[in-house]
Length: 226
Image (cartoon, rainbow, N blue to C red; front, side, top):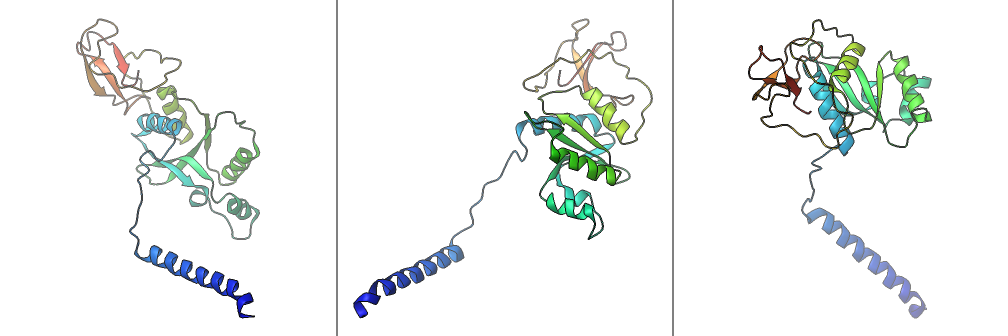
């Protein structure tokens, strides 16, 4: 009888010793962690940089906020059920008014090889519509027209701007693989040196651009990321 029960006793003892060792390791081992330096994937980081340049004069950009932190509803409603199901889902970007300190609109990026008609995006549209919260959707891509992005977002947020910029900005390139800042460029019109300035009025207010050093004699200009 004792010999028959010996394997069970041995197994039980090993389990107890293992449990004690695991507990001691958890209790006395030092904390180890690494910083996630990037936070966002590459395409979202690129969009965040462009969006911040476009709207920083009026709006703050809050990335990756949980839907449940932005939208709320009655406890036992159909909307509450949908929010609970999607509680781990996040809005890619939330636009927050600098002066009023309130949410103006939200932005989602449609991943590559994903249709905007997917069920997940339909539900988010329905939830935002129910909350009367403007929702903008953009396809993933490495670069976009910052001026047009600014115009669309500010208009959606009910922010109107009057006037046009003093500088003649060239049309943006169709595609850019990587955004790079131009250092001391030459004027595209007269080849003179250029100075970095921040536009103060018009639809591009708040954006940085290189302006010809001979301005206003020459109105050549180019965006920082062009």
